Image (cartoon, rainbow, N blue to C red; front, side, top):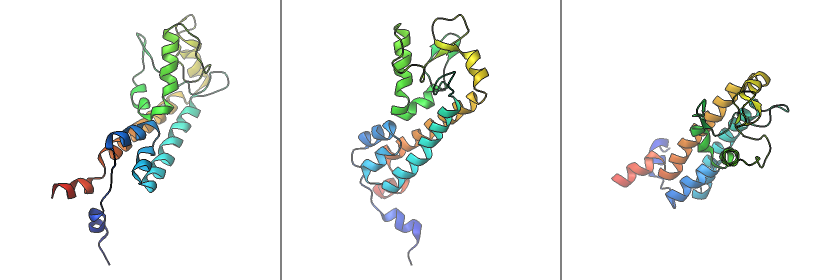
Length: 177
């Protein structure tokens, strides 16, 4: 019977193009590992990260407020949205938020309505899309919890990106010997 850690250390992994694997992992959690042929890890990462993000989005959604209102880009004076940095690590899932923020800054109406758009800072504000932040937080009592879950999903995907781009530790140890 072989020792499991020793057998795992002797296994070689073809990381293919590490930059492309990292980019694919950013685009969709687990896609970089799928590209590398590490199918079990791809499924594990996809089914851990995507549901966490979707649950967070659901907690930031309602019929009155809109969909995923807790995922948006904003660098306005009264609303620096630092949560979007880890949320942005989810690639395609965060693209609508960035696109809508750009549209609003350009004076256009958001393409997908009230999905991932910055709210008004206060009821008379014209810079956001209805409703105001105060109204959203009244309508969505779990708004902050949803924000935390989407940020945690993004941080988990950041680790996945690093793993896809750099590979497991055992592969690096073997290369150095």
